[in-house]
Image (tube, rainbow, N blue to C red; front, side):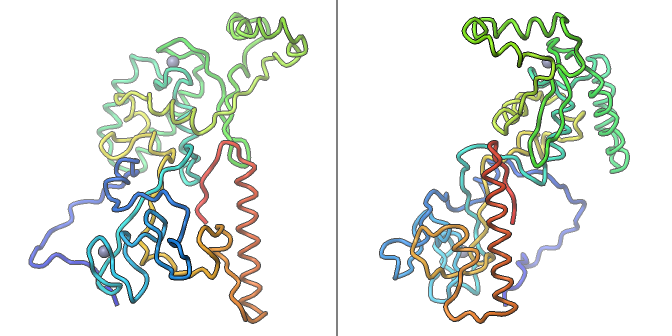
Length: 320
Ligand SMILES: [Zn+2]
Ligand SMILES: [Zn+2]
């Protein structure tokens, strides 16, 4: 059995624990392998040699008794495992941070990304945010900033018009920019003027140009907005630039856990098997009954989640 790692002859007192969000750069630094291949095994697949840069790459440790880790050269008993990382083709919302992502979007300008508070109020609130340490006080400040920002329709920094940001089920974010704007107001007329050329070619478009216009904010757009948030405004979002930044709430990279802490499923199927194949393989001779029922349920849950993923054009990561 593996033992917890302890440095010998060193006694330390733990002064505190700091939680943060891993950035894409942090993930790369703590990893030993870049996963780019969808192949599980290198050809010929029957020899079951893990494919280099695949999710079973031996640089992340081993889950087999007869092979050793390519990073530390230790065997299954002694190697504690090493992380890998894979880059996503497009940014994705993290389902666990989704609520915070919506809150931050409500607090910032959807053009210049500054927090929607008056410039004269910001220094005082920033100081207050840096001073407080209690969770409840921070939560109260977070709520107060959110309530104040939701009331602002014109950005004090760039003057852009901001509307209501809300979540649409299942996991979409919409910005109703002109929800509370009256018909014929200069803001709306200015916005519609950009469609003048399109209107010349298609008169039908006119019926769609109303104040009910909604903008769907996809993960790429949200990431662009979050990247522009000034560091000076981070305390107002109850974030500390040393440990986390709003842009880290949008996933562009995933950590791949070490081989030895993942279930060691030896797929009977050839390399390049699908996710469903890997996660719920039907073993020959599996008895029907409770375990078979469980397997079918798993397949159903996974296929439901994949169906849901397909419906989300923006893309959201679920941890199953
Ligand atoms: Zn190792
Ligand atoms: Zn602005």
